[in-house]
Length: 143
Image (cartoon, rainbow, N blue to C red; front, side, top):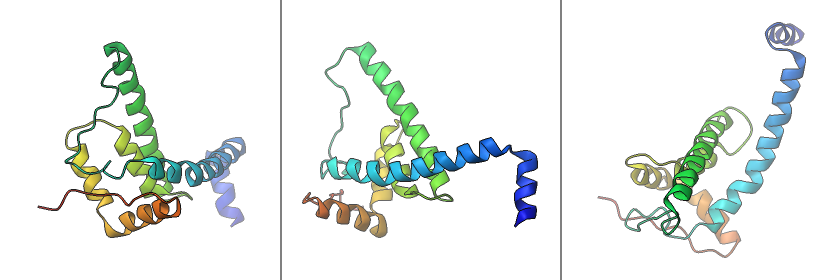
């Protein structure tokens, strides 16, 4: 084990390794707190493709554009963090789902519905919602 650590330290300074460890722990704890709060606060039909979503519909166009840019950047960061959490401690799939939900791209709603429609993920999300007395998520019926 000492040989592996010495090899890693040749390429990456100890300060960077410590920083990455601290960031990983903070990300893990943050995901344990934030992801359930977000999923519990969503309306039950949020992932239903039949329900239209209008984000910042009644705001000034420049404010809407700024909001869309910020929302997409945060979405990309969460998607990448969720991907990293597949290999590191954290709630990777749920973090990726939140990231995808924040981003805007064609056929996003169908991708979200397909991800949430997976029985394991839907079960985890609805179990969280049950703990907080929220109704389960609903999806459009399959084709």
